Length: 112
Image (cartoon, one colour):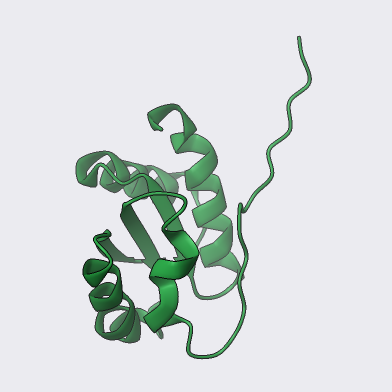
């Protein structure tokens, strides 16, 4: 078997006032994004990130992360990726949200 490696996440960005610039950071990765968000940031993502993505021609679907990185949560989100035909996953929030976004990306690799 040939050794493989996965570099995940592909990009990790930290900073202030980035939601309205999200299109710049993801446009090279896809044009249909699933944005997995913590509860505390979900409204801001819908108000700031989604409009800028749509103006850039990137479809966006926001989904609230359900607090724990479990097999059930990953499967729930995988179904949304499939239903939405998402080709990029963005985690916005804390560590568990990032973990579930990374796990989802690894599980969904066969779709892309």
